[in-house]
Length: 178
Length: 178
Image (cartoon, rainbow over all chains, first blue to last red; front, side):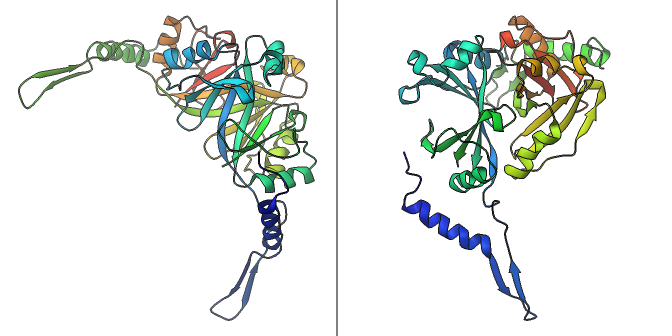
């Protein structure tokens, strides 16, 4: 897991402070100084939808629908014991569907969801971002609650953080560093 | 609304029957006949995720999150009275988020969902397909229940049909003709 307040984080923050104040200082051909300022809090971007995560009781059975009925490409089942889920990925061309089933019973992060939604359903969506640390600072400044203090290493080996669904139209949103 | 068993539909079916039987008959340079057969039920494809639809109590407030906090491009609010919803679209680069709020009280198709999910949440996902009529035939042959007998004209002016969530891992899936 990457430590939130590590050296690279501090360096990134210092750099961003400078960037936020004055992002460009250019001497034009006519000799007039051109200065481009960038407002605080907009120094990160959503790059796209990485995946939709569907919680199921059985990913193998769940993936049959996508492979055999929808004729979509599906991955092998991959146990991700450290994350408490089995995963299958479905290629939707412009994005992915991630099927999940629980490992470890009540300890699995999708266990409670499946107790409430016994047929399964959409558990969360994941958005790629270009700078997860800038996003965290910005989201905090807007009062968006995060489900952890700092990013964790997700199922794809990248930094991820989850946002509180009550602050996001009832949707559990995962941000992932691209 | 497009009539399911109209002329173009019949023409399409006849053409597809032929296609399913023998899709290619080629005389190769060496004089050997090459025949390519395509199995029935695979003559349609999912082209991508068109959108994720999020039901909210207020699309204007809901879109604030995406525009002001996530810095994503959002459309104007568009009342779609005939569909019982207001819509706002959010550009996610590789796909769209469609925000919905109800028009017409209990008659709105998202009313019951919002009664159960008072903070809002993901109502459905929409997949683009290349041939919605071929998809319908194929899905029926696999025992997937549809929420209407034939496609209807959706909010985008294209043919759409919804699949029963209990046959789709608990997820309400809309298919849309590309």
